[in-house]
Image (tube, rainbow, N blue to C red; front, top):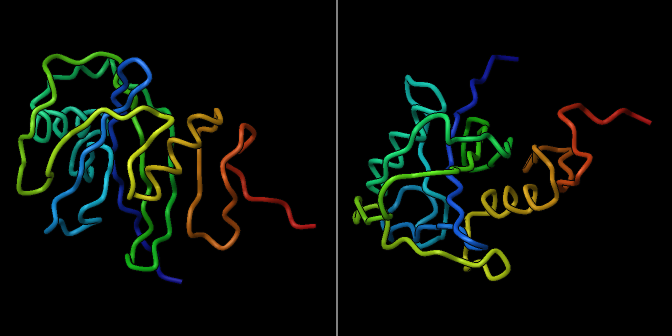
Length: 163
C-alpha cells in the first residue's frame, strides 16, 4: 500500500464564560459552506502553535501568544469526500488580545458566541465531535474509520484488541 500523508487542521477553541466562538462559513466556501465551525486553517510549513497564531490574526484580527495555547483534543478523520486522512487538532486559547472581528468576509459570514448547551446547526460534524470529546474528558476521537467509536473518558490512542 502506498503511503498517504495526512492533512493537519488547526482549530481554535475560544471560551468566554460558558460560551464558545464559532463562525458561519461563507456560502461559497470550498469546505462546509453555510455551516458553523471553529476558527481554523490548514497547517502550512509552520508549527501547530504558529499556525494557530496566524489563523487568529488572519480570521479574527486577534493576537495570541504560544504559551496561552493548549492542545485539548484531536480528531482523526477519514472523509469519503477527501482522498487524504485529516488530523484535526483543537487548541484551547486561554488568553488573547483584541475582540473578534470579521477579517475575511469572503470566507466567513459572521462570528458569534454560543452557549455550549445550545450550539447552532448545522455545525461541522468533527467540530461537534471534538466538543463532545472535550466535554467527556477525552483527548482523541476517530471519525469515518472502519472501527471508529464515539469518544469517552477512557478513549486511548491505541487500536482495539481483537476478541
